[in-house]
Image (cartoon, rainbow, N blue to C red; front, side, top):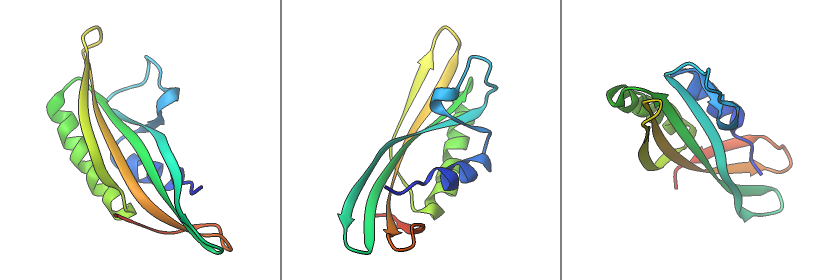
Amino acid sequence: MIDFHVQLVSALETVLPTHYELALTSGTKVPCISYMETNNYTHLSGDTLGYSYITYQIKVWDHDIATLQRYAQKIDNVLRPLGFKRISSGELYDTNSTMIQKILTYEALASEDYENPIVLESEIN
């Protein structure tokens, strides 16, 4: 399993404050980003090299849809160089708080050298 959390959070932090999805509270200031890994599975595996698909759900939180759209584009711009592509997008509105979530799903195919367990590269498939 390839761990991409550090690279992902570092990239997202250049856009907005970033939090792990399950650590959000009602006191979290917006606009902000939350993330959660939703899938990480081996695609191909050999003796010394393996490939995994990694999927993250990224949410941008705010009260204004136009602001969310701008941040969604910025997120695309910082994740694309890491090898992630957006595979879905949607919006969710909470009438009680007037909070809007822009929900983005990203996927990457990443390679790992088993003899030297660091991520070598990631590429869009």
